[in-house]
Amino acid sequence: MAEPDFERRLERLFADAPAFADDDAFADRIAQRLDRGWTARRWLIGAAGVTGGVVGASQMVVSGVFHRMESAGTSARALSTGLTQTAPAQWISTLPSGGVVVWIAVAVAIVMIGFVLTRVIEEI
Image 1: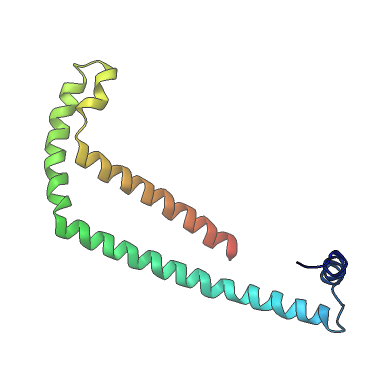
Image 2: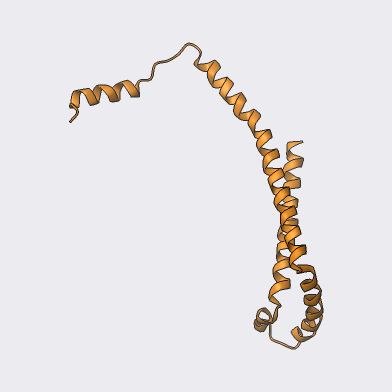
């Protein structure tokens, strides 16, 4: 069991950190290293995003999503004529499940590209 006096003295020593002569220079060097690292991080994150997009697009091609979108397009035309005859509350249940998800993903990707472009323009 530790003595209370020793614990109090140890806590005081850790609370009062000694000051060094080059602490401002050290803080400046660390800040410069952190700022310099953001450029590399941005490039790595961008490269990872592009790689993920390429992998996702190749998986969509392999799985036949585009063929399903064509069939969804034909059903959408038939659906548009049927939507005029149904109540608005029933519209959601009549939407095709596969095509809508793809179009929503495309819309989200377009919005994301817009955010990326605005970020790039701000940095320039």
